[in-house]
Length: 107
Image (cartoon, rainbow, N blue to C red; front, side):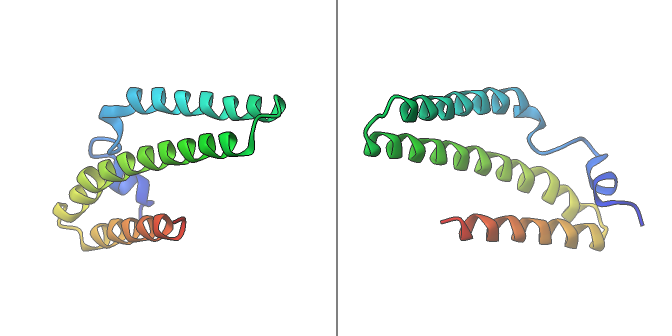
């Protein structure tokens, strides 16, 4: 049996491929926000100001994750469901449900 990546990703790549550059740019901005939080700590900034920035980073990461999840559903899962291969469809459905469970636990 082929591994899941080769069996399901050879069709046209990953669901985020079309937005890859924008996603990387967003990650760089988020990375800058995290470095800013580090500077705030070093500068002995007020607790609530730091917590506000941490919340902003968390929101930014969640937004990015949902964009990638959307791509996964509309590309990878959709392809698996239309592939005619019940094993591949079941695997992608299971991956999707696992991802949703992870998101719901983090809240």
